[in-house]
Image (cartoon, rainbow, N blue to C red):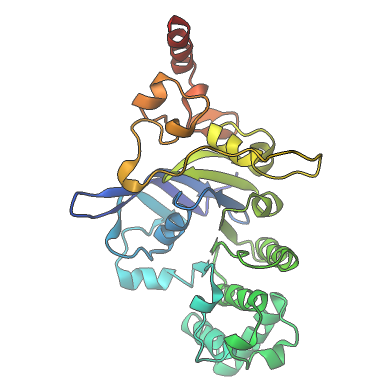
Length: 334
């Protein structure tokens, strides 16, 4: 992989409470290269959206970054004052939120919102900014952009509003775009169109994309690599084809087994027993151990570090020969 555009190192996010801090993200680490789409997948509560909000500096109190570093183009950005971070946000990092209605001002025309953003991050005249806004709407697939630019958000369908939000994220031509569930609540045909827009974004603009979703189908269709998250940690990260076809971590295996296939009819889809632990009740050792079919003694005692398996990393003691051998010996003795 080329020199990373974004580098996240040992990111830890905590929420202050009366009983002490709750750890929401724990030692999250990954890189994203220019022109790459990194998928981030996992159940609700895994920490996917929180990772994106941490990168863009939009954590709501009492949440805060307690440790780690976030580097963008070699510059550390997690410790910048709010004023400096506002200059980074929009200009260098664009954000596509899940619900376009919360991203667009319902009282302003779509064109006014686009033009305002373009003017804030460029030296263009209002006329030039309007021309660029029309071009952006055309690029994301809005029909008749010269007319639709003067419409209000409620005059657009859900899919069209999401396209407008993507255009808004591209206004300043950022080098990194974080897309948080951009295809949720959209029908399959519109999902495919939004995916095509994101792919074209990386090809034509050379931008990197972090695609946050719970939909493995979207990840398989769109991403170059995928990070599987569980309870605020990365369980496995690697090339999307390898992770989908031959997952290493037991949690990733459970996710992939739950995806319906067209190869044949099955009486019942596979499922992972139990549920994601609350932040106040994350078990000792591997957070997945109460739900894991392969659990053995070390899993209940010590948290596994990310272990290299070829080009992939899997946080699982099954891939540590010493721990796995000790576990097998303990099983045999019992």
